[in-house]
Image (cartoon, rainbow over all chains, first blue to last red; front, top):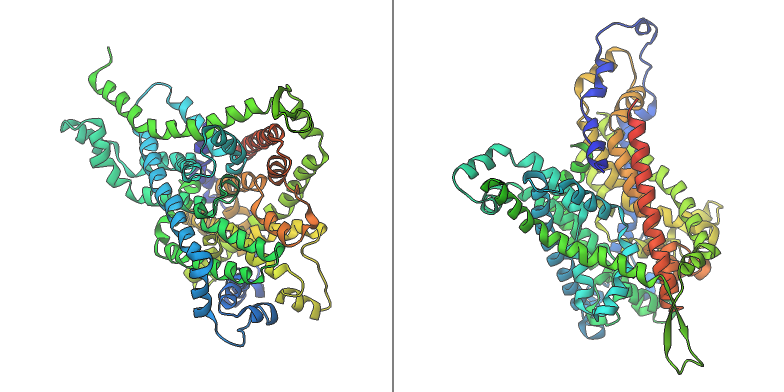
Length: 316
Length: 298
């Protein structure tokens, strides 16, 4: 099953040829370039893009504005306008002290689940992807199709099976029940294989082997540094994936002290709606802003990496 | 027989592969197998519940129960309706935006790229919290605005929940896929575009008959991942359900599984339904890859 790899290379050359064929066609004379419509003018295109930007940014604006409001203003004033007073500092103070400072604990849990988890997942993926690309061993393609199978099994369909197994192993409602599943990232292995093929030239490895470096040493000292950009990309992918995961922690955890931010916000939100604690709604809103802001900062800083990673699967 | 270098490669491969495959076995293969085992049993409470519970071998009856349960099947219909709206709008929107960016007519390209991508940095749960506020009557400035234009909608009703959930997903994923398509468009060889210009093709014609076919593999891959993602629909409707229980607790297949497991404690049924979802997703993604491969070979 080499489905993914055969999907990709077709992107570039061969299909271009018919278009570039120099033979003049009779059609050419008849067809006169139409004058571009208003929508295709510079202003038109920019206006369309601006409209789409409005769609993506307005909800974020709502989040920012709402975080500065008092509870009365949150429910009483227009969502896209400022409230009567700026309550941001009060709200932040309230957020970090609510329920004995549990929010900070959730943030730290998330850093462990997503940060440390994605770091290890990226190391394991790069090691495996490199082995698939550069080393000869029996049963390679059969093992790789197992990886691709892992890509195709949806993550949330694993939540209940994982819960059942964790219940058997006594890992339900423990840190490990959420942490360990995050260490496995089949798509990362696929990406690492692609990266290894394009970033690590075979000649460099040959040279290292000639110098008497063992295979493992060649990987650690020569190949791994060359794969660093791919490593960051895979890390970012898995980081967002674990950050986003909700179903698994929801079924796995019942102890508040083990929650990731996602689940904590959800619990505040549902207690506001169903148990009549409207003040928790404001906590969920401010907590969302505080959770999102560093993520946006990370994405802005690491643009180069996520862009190259997202396109590696599609263009290469 | 094997040369020392071949042996060295094999040993290193084993070393490099074992962390991934060890964990893969523990958190993917083992849970699937264990769930498959559990799906063959059903729990019966003996007496009045005082005598504890016992597991009875049930064969494939859990699968039969899931498949014959209208609530489970309806979940797939919801996903189908959701895909019918979400995939064309999101992929089409991403494609149009990428083509606009690539048209050479757009200003401030990197600003737009970032601004359109930004929602992807927002976790799905938070995106759902934001949008559900914007869907809630009495709070939402969007509803107020629509009402002043003479339109009244209930975003949280059963009929509209598919649109509301799809919109949240469009918001999260359109910019992400646009970045992918835009990068693929920039890899389209210049000569092809120049030739089209010489042929007198306008911007729209060039886009439709040259650019789009050439980035087809990127689009196919995006559709594949979108389909896999759609089957998993859980977070957004879960938040919608919290705000208005109109959609019911088994609205999507994953919600059905969660309800079966944690409200009805029917773990055999939940395991069977989970495996059916995983199987369905794998078969569907296999079909999508097959289909798009056949399509790309003239």
